[in-house]
Length: 256
Image (cartoon, rainbow, N blue to C red; front, top):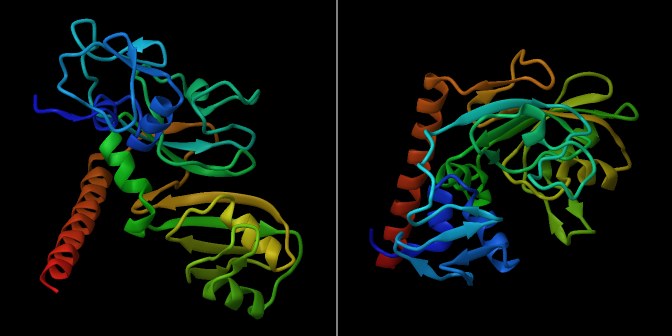
């Protein structure tokens, strides 16, 4: 094959996302033909590549697994990392899936709800990329009743002084005296909790109920399912539309 970046190769092999691959390479957990790999280097697929102690390239490499995309109802107290640094159970240990997969993005340990897991690096990258403005919907309960002003300020964007940013405008609708639905197109660290905290509220429970067109529905806590062919077709259609829009924008900028 033509030479490609090592992070892309690991992503295409279903090991992890490109971003995670770069982190592993930078941490010295990836080797190429016995030497420590460098971030940004290219390979041609003939090398013996070892990632986190497992061979993924060359003659000893494994056969690429069939594409997998799962929807999990993550319980509270379970972490999304694939490592064992946190003493809490992680999502990989929770579901014990027979094929190597990894989470698409994150969901806080104290949060619950929809989490996607896959072995498709490029798909994960497209879903996670903040610039693609993909919608994620949450059901949130806070510690006290709120008013219309609270909803208005959440919709318009909240200054997160700790992070030095103001959140993007978003959709927020009341779902009860202390509960609301919110649709975000960005994924700052503990964003909803920080937004509520800036306005004097504490999040009591937070559940993600939708990622793009994939809905949590009645999936029981701790259970998972394969994304249906119809859901996958619609997901890919939306991702394709974003790619085409980016091409149009790039073409327009090059003409200016």
